Image 1 (cartoon, rainbow, N blue to C red):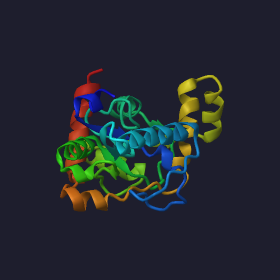
Image 2: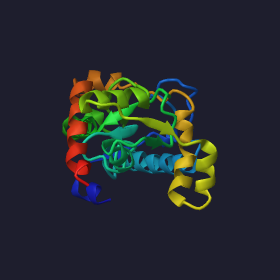
Image 3: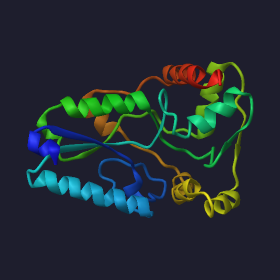
Length: 225
């Protein structure tokens, strides 16, 4: 690896696919890898390769893990193009996931701050995967309500039926890949970031500030289109 050759610290952003189904239990740094999807198996294998290289002394690596993103710059998230274009136009937003499911949504600036902390802290943080700082898990409906309050009007949402998504997945590759991960909204999908907060003394941005910044960004990017 280039990082190993240069003697540089390698900070990797990863997702939670390798953890699979948890039965609704909170996920933390001790949650075992138990992938239940093809993408989860790939992420688990990649994590093993990285930490094996670290343990062999080939690279100085640390991993920050996060759930689904939202916030400024998140055009390809669940709260990006497919959400804000209809929302700002006054149309109903159709969600492919269960909007009532308890779910951790990581605010993008919190992810960035967490990764920066991993890059700057002492050597003892290396060789581990850390849950990046996040706000308490909420449903998509609750997060949309925060956006609605900032926007000053209600954002209408609906859910695309699973049978429709399965049919679309037969001909649309992106939807097929999405369907594989919908298990994350079948039960609570909750990140426990207490270990990160205690070690790095870093807390997530206040929810009202995050909602305001997200709506401000969305207006600038989408409202004039």
